[in-house]
Image 1 (cartoon, helix red, strand yellow):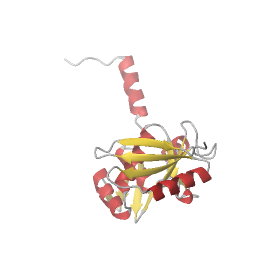
Image 2 (image 1 turned 180 degrees about the horizontal axis):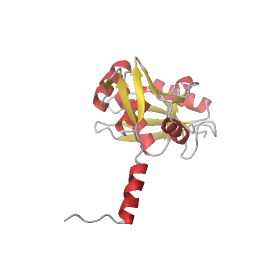
Image 3 (image 1 turned 90 degrees about the vertical axis):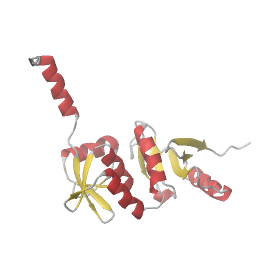
Image 4 (image 1 turned 180 degrees about the vertical axis):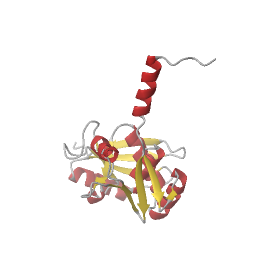
Length: 194
């Protein structure tokens, strides 16, 4: 005998269904990922600053954003008519971008911690990171982040150059060390005047 659903059970199911948003449709063409123009994509941009809003109303994601959103089930990604899985897209993305996995581990960890992570190419860094609750345009980024694999060396010259870039842009330097288990340890570095 089946149990009869109560009003509270039905209400809980409706809330659960509405909480689970439909995935945003996105297309992968060459090295670009373009998401459809929709209320869901606009909400994703407004809430968490994923992607770059194009004049057409569509969102363009970089490889790391697309990987993260694909892994979280927030986007459905297709190349032509073929749906891309996370593993398949990861292989393609690694061919396009060196050191992608190390960068992805740091990006994912920061996003999972609630930070907004943006590219920092104009600063000569991998990422700029905004403090929790701060969106780009409201205030400046707090950190410049450089991901480094644990087994990869970092010379004193490179370290000093990274620190100078952070200091000259009035940001803090954050080095994200990714170990063999893909866990990230952060070191915040600042100049000290004696």
